[in-house]
Image (tube, rainbow, N blue to C red; front, side, top):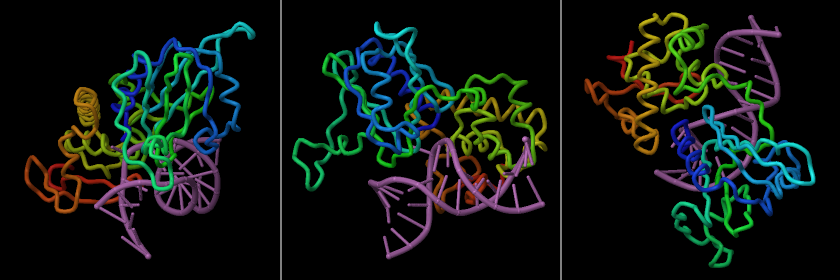
Length: 275
DNA sequence: ACACGTGTTATGCG
DNA sequence: TCGCATAACACGTG
């Protein structure tokens, strides 16, 4: 589910519905999702605080938190990474339409819905509402005071000069370069395939061998794909995405798409148009 | 049963 | 130490 566009949607949900509400309890018992924090540590750090602002760079979200009377200064940063299957749900006053409950699970009470089963982290607010991370695969991550220096510039904001310099370097395939979050933050597997297809570039090309024009085109198509995905509610809006399957064809020239592994990810491209 | 996957990180090699 | 490649992580889905 989450690449940069989906994470931006989540950011907007948090901004609209979670700010300013006093935190009274925290469910941080999932030690894998909350690593490296032991259970209770995040709870102790956040109880009685409020989220003040939500930021995003690439696929990482983080929230500023308020100070509290008994301690000096502002609170810690709370960062949220959705991983492969994470979603944010906020309910209570000012929240969006709550999700449907889903099917009950065998061996659980009727009232215990599917989304409860996948709840990996939660903030409970004084008004009775909750913010939850739902994440079946548990590859999402919650942590305090994240290291933001490890992230490259946001893929939707990066300027031309910086893009040329950072992406057009090294002997690794250009797709691997796009996926490296320290080079550029926010590009995932589907977005990379889409932008490379739109700009007619073979994903296996060594990054340093791309011309300036090719890099400019790649950046333009990447930004276009991101804007389009944000507007249409997800990376699934890409033109190539629905054709990434066995027997899929290039929607432009009709050639059969080729499948391979590039940057250790499954990659689909048009062998005729992408050079 | 078995392979696969919209993501990150640890590990190993030259 | 750096650049790059691959395995590992967790777990639902086809």
